[in-house]
Length: 229
Ligand SMILES: Nc1ncnc2c1ncn2[C@@H]1O[C@H](COP(=O)(O)OP(=O)(O)O)[C@@H](O)[C@H]1O
Ligand SMILES: [Mg+2]
Image (cartoon, rainbow, N blue to C red; front, side, top):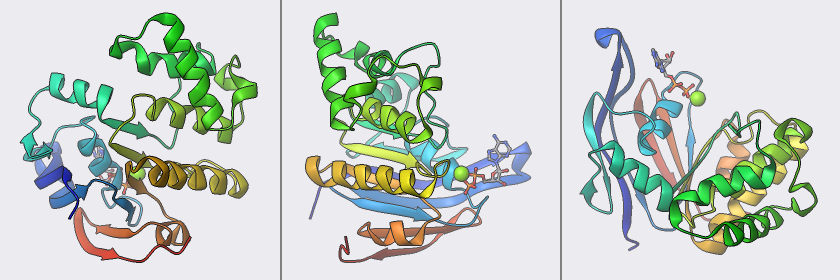
């Protein structure tokens, strides 16, 4: 039995005094080495859940625990995101005025490395995601697939135990989508990073070992499969 990394406990998220309820009592446990897809129709609460799992948004009630301890403050979340949790968004969210390598270096600022070491590590990370030839390009000079690869390099810069990805292939054509999916699955396997990936692609979800389905703010299914690819 693997150790529990993150636990979402009885989480509700409400807006507008309860008129909008993206999450209506969600419980989810993510263990070390998990490879988990989150499926569900548009508007079912997938992004709301990923945001709460990464501390980008706070639950209206319920709580999130990291390795058994409640995450309580913004400082706790900042520390976790600097060391233990990486996040990849559908929109890439790179800083447009910074080059690829500078975007990755930003993620390393908190960990005390000297500038030269940050640069070297960032170059290695970009090489790891196949972008050795794009280190000094600005995001708007990169394709969507390349931008997402920079975002992935940034997300794994600090060797996270958990990688959250919200429709990471949602803005990409099918060839780039496949490349990004393969990269994320390879990172999961190579480093044993737990991966939680929102996707609409059932074939991609089937390549994960666990499929969680969310509907109307509730988890309605949590299946495990043997790896197929
Ligand atoms: N900040 C917000 N304010 C008001 N409603 C929101 C907010 N965030 C999400 N919602 C609503 O919550 C529901 C779930 O949204 P979301 O989590 O983005 O779903 P999904 O990612 O599954 O498409 C939607 O109806 C959405 O409009
Ligand atoms: Mg969404």
